[in-house]
Each structure stands twice: as C-alpha cells, then as structure tokens.
Length: 121
Length: 107
Image (spheres, rainbow over the protein chains, first blue to last red):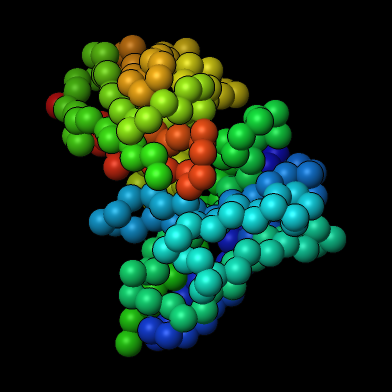
C-alpha cells in the first residue's frame, strides 16, 4: 500500500523559513518522480515543484522559484521542501504526491494527507 | 501557462441522478488530462487519467471524455459518497495546472 506522510508544517513569520518532509512507503521511491502541490481556500490547488527520481530534473512554479528548494534522500525514502523568504501568500496545506509509474508525463496518482503552513506575524 | 477552467462552480444533484462536469483548457492537452475527487479534510484522489481511463478501484459510474481542449466528467448515478469537490488537471506541460473545481452538492 502506497503511503505518503508529510510533516514539518507550522506557524512561521513572514520572511522566515520552514522545511517540509514527506516519508514514502509502498513503492520504489528512488524510481519515482515526486511533486509538491499546495492548496489554499481561496486559490484552489497549485503545483509547486517536481523532482525526478534520480534528482537530476527539477521544476518549480514561478511563484516559488528562488525561494523554495526541492530535494530528496532516496536512502531514507524522503522528499523535502525547503521554504525560505516565506510570504503570507505561501499559507496553504502542502501535499506531496507521487508520479504514476507508467505515465510518460507527470500524472499524480497518490497524495499524502498534507501539512499546514501558516505564514503570519 | 495552460489555464484550466471548470464549470459550473457548484452543481446541485439528487442522489441517483446523473452529474456532468465540464473542464476547458486554454490549449490542447490531450491526452494528458486528469480528474480528482476531494472530500473535506482529505487529499485529492485520482479518478480519471488520459481523459478517459479510470484509475484503479474507481467505480464504473465515473467516466471521462473529451479531446483537445474540452473535457467532461460524468457520474452516472450519484451515490452519497460522491458528494465532493472535483478538479481537472493537465499534465501535458509545465507548469502543471488545475481547474478551480466543481462542488457537487446534495439537492
């Protein structure tokens, strides 16, 4: 059974930093591209970043480029999102999701339950 | 960026009735179009991919159709567990983009 468990969310002041983690199980993590998606009540679902299984291909949304860094530790089946220079508009539930193994493009077939990030003074 | 537009924003349907949800892409995304279901407090669940292929364990009452830029999700006979928010998403190109969602509520 595929499981994705996010952690690391919380309350942070504007300009601050936070590091999210996503521990994966139930599939071959090192072979799977992984993605962060966030959701705000007013803006719906927004793709944030994707990292290939090998770590060589990385994609970021323009809204987070230069501030967020996606990374992974395949030895620990863990995906990370380092978030710096946080803004109020980064407030959201952050989900990690895995790419469907048989898809040629980045189809997201399993999602974690999410971790809430609140940026506020 | 490919803009995804869903309609209607809210759909009121009685149990047992058919629900038809629409999704439009600002440019062709075929066949890389997915539909997700999300219930309160839960993560999105993949229903349909490739515009018309049901994901594993998804009941046959869910079907997807469409091509190019116009897509439809049909729920043939709504069950109580189907009342939720539904999102379409294109995965044809970066950035991945989602529609604003359609809330299916009990009439």
